[in-house]
Length: 83
Image 1 (cartoon, rainbow, N blue to C red):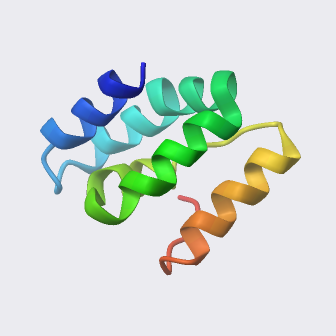
Image 2: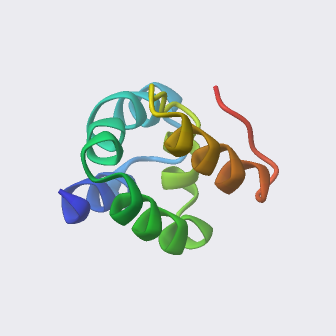
């Protein structure tokens, strides 16, 4: 799943916010919900070199408070907030 999500973010045009949003609310959110710490570790390592991944992360919502806090910290450290 990690490769799939990261490849989607590499292939998506940076100016297609609708597509980036769909990546965030579906495969990225599902991956993070399923793999929490492992997924977020990979996201955090890749997000500085992948602006589409960073933008997609702003669309991720989760019911897990610890995961929400970690996503907010990743976004906040880069001057971003949730969409």
